[in-house]
Structures are given as structure tokens and as C-alpha cells.
Image 1 (cartoon, rainbow over the protein chains, first blue to last red):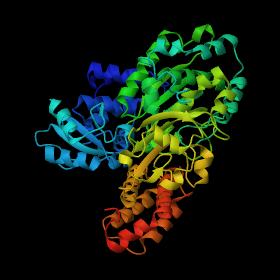
Image 2 (cartoon, rainbow over the protein chains, first blue to last red; image 1 turned 180 degrees about the vertical axis):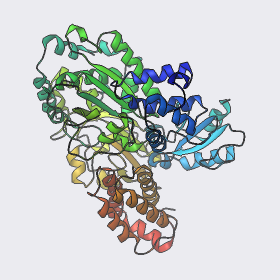
Image 3 (spheres, rainbow over the protein chains, first blue to last red; image 1 turned 45 degrees about the horizontal axis):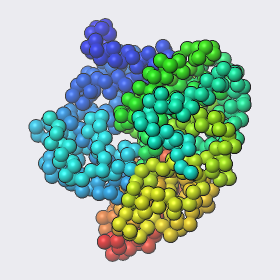
Image 4 (cartoon, chains in turn orange, cyan; image 1 turned 135 degrees about the vertical axis):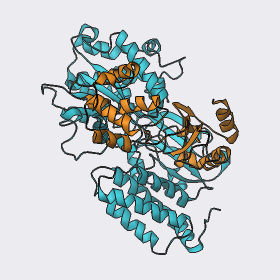
Length: 164
Length: 422
């Protein structure tokens, strides 16, 4: 690890991570790794570089490999660049029964990318996800922190058209 | 009667606010307990008497779980709430966090007092940002009002409570994987024993309960264990939230007494959409074996009734399917889920879930082989009971259930290389 912890991240990011560290016993800084990865990912346009993971390891006094393990295990971390807006469409059973295939098809056609792809302008990434726990509003998707439920192709259009 | 416990404030304007919660007796219970210094054993006995069973899916008696902790053991003990709601079809804990977060907070403080724990974590799945923010706001209100933190209401009892956010992993709903996750690791389940009550979070005695279980505690104690128990039926005390989704007119969460006939629940949800025929129901989340529609119409929504039909009540997630659904396609999607979510730790699950998915997938694609159904039976049987945690069983049971009840549909796919549903 190069330099001191004060050289890692911006003061704002450090303060946010420190708030999470404070929740756990002093000898368990590692408990904040999931929050720290999310915070630095959000500040990095939605993905984690190797350098950022190493910085998180340095900040939390963890072995880098332990941070990579976490970053590769959980589905919400991205290890490659993604679009400005990550569209996560649920296709699990309740959504499938209610036409999530049509929603995926519509999005693929509208954006010109397949599931897992990013539009050439870097604006959207389209991702298939597992059950997001909103089956009463199936079919549904998540963009950023927001859930969108009871989707139709028309509703999807109006949501995407409002995003900058 | 509906909405008596977790949803009792649902009719109020912005029911998630502290003053609304207190309008109907919220925090009265913890206040009384701390003021009168009620004996912890008395609280645990009352929860036992209520017949409350773990609402996350396993159905283990909550009071009994609480009694496993050695209250007098010195050092840290923890209360952990499992809000990592991820069982496909389940969306009830999300609504508790959004609409009744203070009931959960009060339930966790009471649980802490009962087992001698001074800290708690609520593990909320990472995708639940809105519920997380709602819960955080409620924590802030509760801290300001003196219901959380040091020396609560001047009683000398301390209880600190925090959220922990997940980051996308179904397996973290398994209690020991969840503990690993809070410790900042991959969510891979631990061997049991030792159980969390002896060796839990940070190696300390820990009680883990589902959101709905903990949020039910204040009402149980306010009205008495017997009151709660008598809402339900034998072996299934209380009322419960059922998340009903799929081909129904009014999908959503319904809090109804345990033992309510499924037919009544279906009617509350507006019946099968478009008046179509009820083909099949998954009664307790996607890990619960499917039940044919005509059989389901004769069952009640309680642990024993659903178990006698060869399935399980699980988390209370009811997925309703009409006659337009192809069961091969449904099973293909479910098998993909377990393949995707297996943590990879145990060979039978890691290899078996992928194997089952590939076989169901090729049947769905019209490339099934005559021996495939026996192969699926065999792989499913060989996963069950051979893994550290229940994910292996959860992946195998739906396969066994589908082949038991809809074998002809799978056979048709293999014989005709197409679907009989159309």
C-alpha cells in the first residue's frame, strides 16, 4: 500500500466509509467492506477497478484478496465499466409469468444491446437479475436505487425517456 | 380478521412515522418491560406460548430459539434480523420495512432484552434502497426518542441497532452465510453445529430471526401469547403475511390468520386473472414443491396443511399459475436461479444445480432425451441432504415436485420436441 490512508479517496468518501466502520466492533473494520465497495463504486461511475479494490483493502487493513473475494461474490458489484444507468430487469418466475420476456425483448430492441451489454454512447447497461422481492408489481426492474413496477413497454419507454 | 399484527397500522397516513406507530400503542411494550423490569424468561415464555414460528421460511419456533442463548454468559451477544428477502415470490419484509419499521425496531429491542444482547444488526438486501432509507429514518427517530442507545428510558439497558446492507446474493438469506457477510466475507454458509446461539456473529452468541418474526413480537406481548396463538390454528399460531403473485388480479401482501383456506386468499387476490383455469401453485416461495391447482383449492394456509400435501408453507410466498403456463419453462427458470445462486462451496450443489439446469434447459429447447427424467430424479435425490446448507435441498425439491405432478408435460416435451401448452 502506497502512502497513508489520508491519501486514499476523497474526504467525503472517507467520512462515509468511516460512518459504516463505526457501526461494528473496533477490531472488525472488515465488516465495512461491502459498504465501502458500494460507496467507491458509486463514486466511480458504477464499477470497481483493481486499484479501487486495493485502496479499499488498504483503508480497511484487509488483504487485497479478501476484498476481491467479496467484490466477485456479490452481484451488485461491477468489475468492468458500465453505462451511466444500469437497468436491472428481473426475469424470475413471478416476473416471467407476467411477461418479463417482453420487457427484456423491448429493452434489447430499444437500446440495441443484448442482456449484459452497454449502449455505444455509454448511457445504458442492460442486466438480467434474480428476484428483487417486488413480485406483487411484476414485471419489474431496478435502475440505480429505484424500483419500477407493473411495467409495460410503454411505461419502460416513458421511464427511459426521462433519464438524462 | 385481517391486518392484526405486522400490518395493523397500514390504514394510517404515513404509518412508518414514530408518532403514528405510537398512536396505536407502539413502544408501550418495551416501556412497560423496562419500567417493571419484567423477567426475561417471562418474555421468552410468552413468545413460546404464542406459537410464533420463523417467518423466513424454516418455521422454527421463535421462542424456543431465543431460549437457546445463555443469557448469563458475559461479553457481547447479538440480535440479527434477516431482511435479506430473496426467496423468489416473497416481498413481505420489504413492506414491513417500508410501512412498519418501528415494530421491527421495538421487536429487536425486546429480543435484545430477553436474551441479554446489547447490539443488533438488521441485514437488508442491497437492492432494497428505499426500504433501507425508511428503516434508517425510523432508527433515527427511535434514537432521538430514547428507545435505542445507552440507558434506554433510564432503565440501564443499552441496545444499539444498525443496518447492514447486502450487495446481491440469495445465499445470504441463509443465517450463517448472513453472519459471514456481516463479517465482511463471501456469503458462504458455516457448518452447524455450532449454532449461532453459541457461535454466531464475531463468534459470539447470536439470535437471528426474520423481519416478520421480530416485527410480530410487540403485538404478541401486548395482547398475550394466547391471543396470537388463537388467531391461527394448531401448530401454526398467529396471522401471517402472504405474498401472492403470478396470474392473479390483485397481487400483493395479505395478512390473514394461519389456516385460512387457500381459496379465500385467492379470492382476496381477485382470483385467477381473466377467469382462467388454476393450473398450479407454488405455496411457499420457489423452493417449495409445486401443488396442482385443484389440490391446492382444498388446502389451508398453515404449516401442517401444506406439508401434508408434500410441500411447505416456507416464507408464505404464493405463486399462482394459470393454464397458459408451461411447467417445463417454469422449472427451467427456477433451476437457473439455483444454479446462479449456489455459493459453490459444496460439490453436490455446485455441480448438481448446473447439471439440473442444463437438462431442464435442453428439454425445454426440444432436445430432451428419453432418459432425462430419470436423470433429473437421480441428480435431485443425490443433492438432497448432502450439502452444508439448505440451498441444495431448495434446488432439488422443486425439480422433484414438478416431475411428480407434471411428469406428462415433461415427457411430452421430450417426445414431441415442443410444448403441450402452446
